[in-house]
Image (cartoon, rainbow, N blue to C red; front, side, top):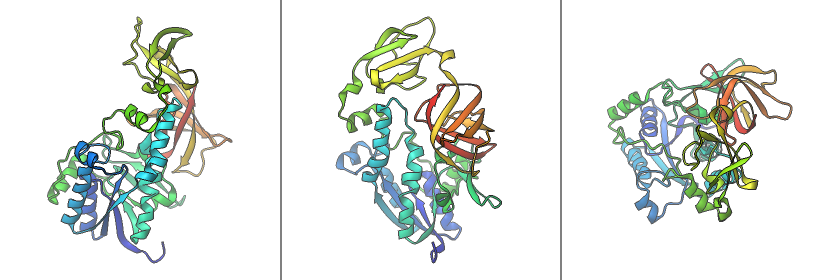
Amino acid sequence: MKGKKQTRVLVGMSGGVDSSTVAALLKSQGFEVVGITVTSIKITDDCKVENNNSGCCNYQSIIDASDIAEQLGIEHHILDLSDVFKEKIINNFVEEYLNGRTPNPCALCNPLIKWGEILKKADEYDCQYYATGHYARLVFDKNRNRYYIKMAKDKIKDQSYFLWGLSQDQLKRTLFPLGDYTKSQVREIAKSFGLKVYNKYESQEICFVPSNNYRDVIKKYNNNNEIFKEGNIIFRGVVIGKHNGYVNYTIGQRRGLGISYHQPLYVKKIIPQTNTIEVDIEECISSKTLYASNINLMKYNDLKKGEEFIVKIRYKDKGSKAICKILETGKLQVDFFEPKKAVTPGQSVVLYEDEDLVAGGIIDVSE
């Protein structure tokens, strides 16, 4: 990074209130701001009409980002990453479901796309830093010479769970200007800057799943209709019903099973090889131990001894106490103090020490 301007920052602008406020804040603080808006799906005429306000290409958000950049008087670029996004994110998303797992595309997209690809553009645009509208805080530990992420002030909006995969090289160039603000404060700041998006609706959808129905994505990018073929639903070795394709189900699912029993039944296991769904009562879909791969250590250099942390296995998880350690195989072993319900292969497992993000990985199996 030698020779780069220390005050020049690339801001990821989605057209929403958070990233727009980041651009305005940084400019007001004296940074030379450059905006960049990424399209993950190719823009077509259909996208402009059908997906004008949510999901997919979100054509309107590109327009909003451009308008905000013009209002702020900053340089703005639109980057089409649809090909690399399909290769690295969508293909993985579909493949995980085909393998009976439930992926977490946002956790994968952050290190590979939102940082991995965009930091290349930061170099091209002569920007030392990259800033986003994520609700998280960045800390530098001088003693360990390591960067790590801390939960945001706004615990409801905190997005640290999705950021476990960021590397030290990525973190050292990152700015999280919203980490010390609540969402309501951010809207007020946006309003004070006169940003038209200050009260804009906030979509909760995955960007390439506009209908919020992941099955549509699988059908679009996979030609194997066998995955939607009818199969058996098994309860403790006995067939008690039929399902309409194993990819339609996720671990812990209760609704939509189409079976009756004197107690509620939940999906316990998905077996693609036999097109089988195993179900059980709530008390029997919990696990004491999980194993995860693709581990990224953030706060510490290693976790070989086995230490107590708070562990989350999904975004809205309140977290549970567990003993965690890295095995000689490189996998993470998590032993919960109390059985954990619906541990789902493919999802992210994230370790916290108080508010500090310690490490994360992708769940492989539980027992």
